[in-house]
Image (cartoon, rainbow, N blue to C red; front, side, top):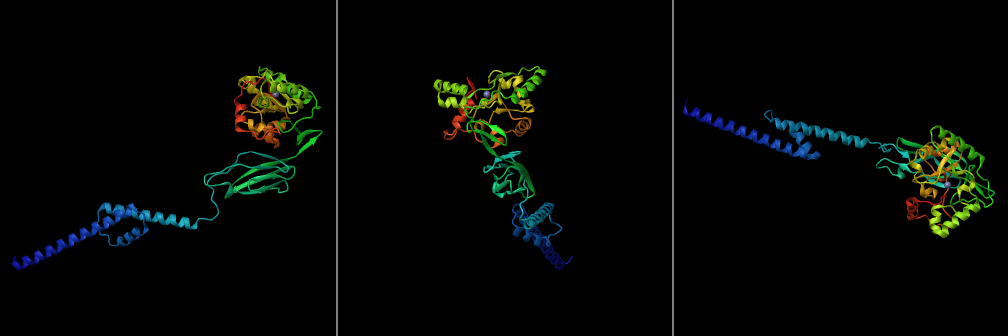
Length: 370
Ligand SMILES: [Zn+2]
């Protein structure tokens, strides 16, 4: 080997070494850029990287290739998302079903009731579209329903593809000889009174229905009997006045009715067995709660509805309304006040405060009752 040849080889080796180092540096540089773009979602970086893709060398490390694949996936996903957002319809999508808090709404002529909705997250009452199949029966203003004339129609609340249909019945209140009726059902509570001379005794329709009920209960080995039923105006006056003088007007109003305001004067009400707050827990009390409607009776002052009926829970006090109405109220979980769209508040009561209602609920030793 000549010295010249040796020099040439040396030069070649230097050159090869230089190329190898250059390639290594280039490879390391690309690898670093890819690592950076993996942890950031900036499209600018990714696209910069994509242009480098062409210059990738076969000797790239496996790690670099993996990161390149991931980066490409990220990019395509982002692109898809962007396109989806761009072509999203302006119509609201349905994030979940909407439902009404009532199965059936009852509203009187010239009265307004609000339909409360259970809405999915992100949807407000303001987003809801309202419509009715009979604008002669109700007037709609958002969720506010005003009765126009007697009848039943469907009110629809919709949002996107979701909707809920709520049957609405419009009722009419009439007063005949001082007695208040709503669609033929007699109403007597804190808001509506009976004349002092109204003196029907226990009505035969009430007594007959109760006798059938009691007979059927007896077949199950249960004893249900009339503890107290009709009370005249004069009798109620004595009861109420003795409560006022013995305790206070407020206390008397919570537990007893003012004369003319007792449902016992109507001839439609019965107190079952002896008045006892434990009655609800007895087999007879449980049977009554489950079956009274089958005979046309309702539990008139249910638990949890004290603010609506104006009275504490009375598991023993039943009111005759007929099988159809009683079944409707039982199945829809409504009090007579809700079913007829009437209030139960004395004229002189400023407004029932929360304290009053709580006291009425807490009081569990009634000497007398509505
Ligand atoms: Zn009673």
